[in-house]
Length: 413
Image 1 (cartoon, rainbow, N blue to C red):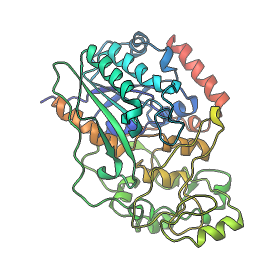
Image 2: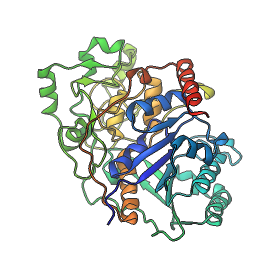
Image 3: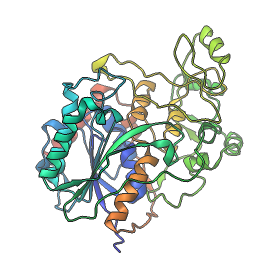
Image 4: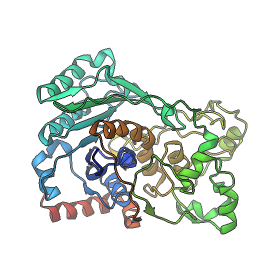
């Protein structure tokens, strides 16, 4: 049995939820590609060991990726979640949506780079009758280039894999001919992780007036102790104060007393009054926001729209007991991101980055299947890895675009 850490590439990387999950399974992500400069910057902050390319997949070819690697090495896995709005039942559900073609660019790069395995994520709508011919054409393209697709194609619910959120996603698993075929992970035979497990220990943001102007605040020793005492197993693992034997990610250097991604949201008095009167699970009739239930699961967290489509913020759940919507950090907990992981300092970008991500625990479960097929026992890293420069999560779009243009020039892209 091999004891190395296999290597992977993440296409359509976003802020890195998919990457984090496969790193936790034992992979080293050597290259990540993300078109959005703000998301790419957040990825670079959280994964300083990865070469990040803020490039458009549609104009990028496999040879450029090999050039960026500066070395030839077999790729064990390629992952990616091509933007799914064209397939989403929440959108226009249009067969001719140009974004639907991005799955074929994912296919093209897989076929050019020839990894041993690939995993593609998308929304369940992709297997609907409307898109049957498109999906069949995609599978045929993979098969004609030497890949076997795992049948039956499945949609997995993140809640079945330790994520405190109802979130169904489709996964297409591919194996290069000659490799052991991939199989889908089985749901955990354990109780579901609840909203209380996830966020009961997160401090009340109303106690920190500075969070009106910033997304971070330093907690006192006494505040740390009192909130840690409220943490359940899931929360303790997100805080990094309880080990997880199935986590093979590189431990990061961070300060657990620094509460991050927690900028407050200002509500009108009428909203506060309405929110305060809602029962667990109840929908507010005016805002159409739903109150979370301590003993239940979070409903699917969504990303909202980008600047090209109006900058609409996706509806955010209402806290189970407080008369406000949840923070980015609370959303990240409900998505299975650990507390060291940071997002853009604005709420709009931060919620987009969480809502667009594959929950790391779900990604980990799938990547563990690839590890098993590779017959590898990856070693657990012991060296602490510093996170990136915090300027990366503070960029405005102009500064971010300038930064990535300079990086591309250095790489000759």
